[in-house]
Image (cartoon, rainbow, N blue to C red; front, side, top):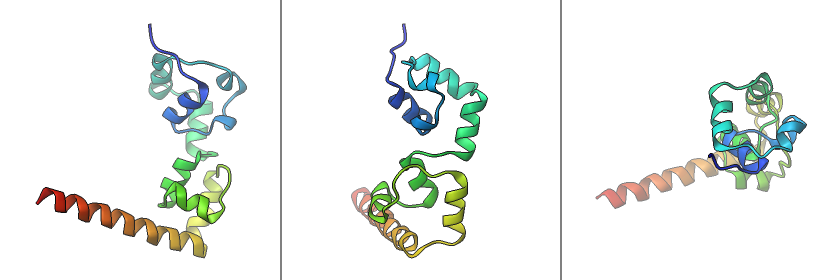
Length: 119
């Protein structure tokens, strides 16, 4: 018997924004096997959400190349869709440029520390 999970957990495992899912999914308690089946053979609604969003904050941050904290600092509230993300990437506002620079510094520092540990 496979363990069931809350819809928010299942949505997180699928990398999707729960409020954008069908009502049936939002009220479900899917099992791990059901989530795995959705990954393997996604229904059209899941394919569409993964393609066009709206995307949850962690996916938005990843697509923009910044941290979730950077999104919060910039005042980005809820999820963004693919068009909104594309517009930000095409003509990056100052906050996005600044947050990408901050993220690059954080990644470089982590890499420096990792290399130091390997020595």
